[in-house]
Length: 43
Image 1 (cartoon, helix red, strand yellow):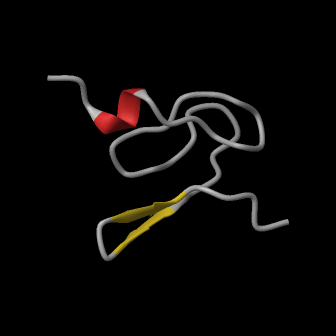
Image 2 (tube, rainbow, N blue to C red):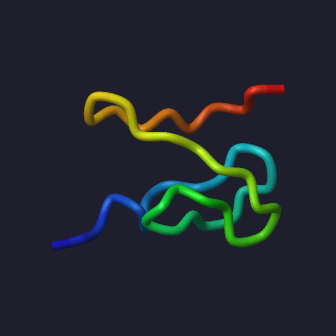
C-alpha cells in the first residue's frame, strides 16, 4: 500500500514532506486536523 505522505508535496517549494508533515527542503510544517491534511500555503 502506498503511504499518503509519498503523494503529498510542499506548496511552497514542491518538495516531499515527512510523516510529521514537515517539508524536507524549506522546513515548513503543516498539520493534520480531523483526518484532513492541511497542506496550504499560509502566506
